[in-house]
Image 1: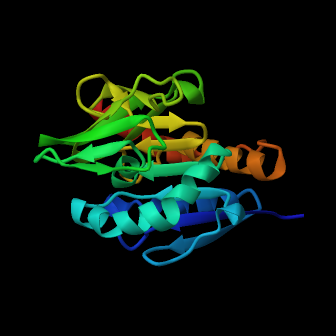
Image 2: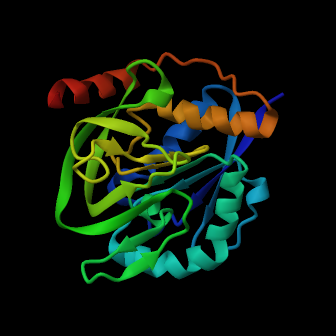
Image 3: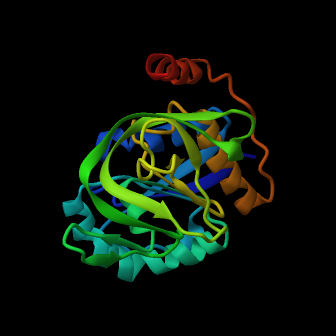
Length: 246
């Protein structure tokens, strides 16, 4: 019997900087290699979503212009239901702009605050300069000394609140991370992840891709066990970044 999952790609036409769509391709391939069917649904402006039929959600990154275009649609028609589903354990990966939209608010250079969905206990403030470059970070939740590698390019500075419900995804070893000050990168709330890492993030970080898939399987079928994969080329790409920028 073939196992089936359904992935929702939110705003693929507006949030797709630095090859973020490659994360969808990675999840699709890793499912195929395990004989898991992954049906991919896309939703953008004006589309309705039934999150009861969704097992995994991805939101990529976009410029301030794209974020402004979709903000009202997201806040009114998709965001509240998405927050409710993540409270019930729905796995989510949000990158850069998508990550910022899921925080408490975004404060512009003029001091105006654009409210977010409040999924993450975090907020973002516009910075005077951009934080750009390659990132190497250690991820405690993946065990041992597992690292993430990726590329960041953002002017927003994201700060995590004091609530223990939201924690940093990783500790920065090289690069800037959330704000360039406290060595935090990304955020975790239940099975929802936020990160500034493009590249895209999942092809060179198979452990993170499998974490998302295992959470989706556990929520849908009650079991998170998935077959291991050789990941030879994935690890070569991962280690090449570490060797180059360490």
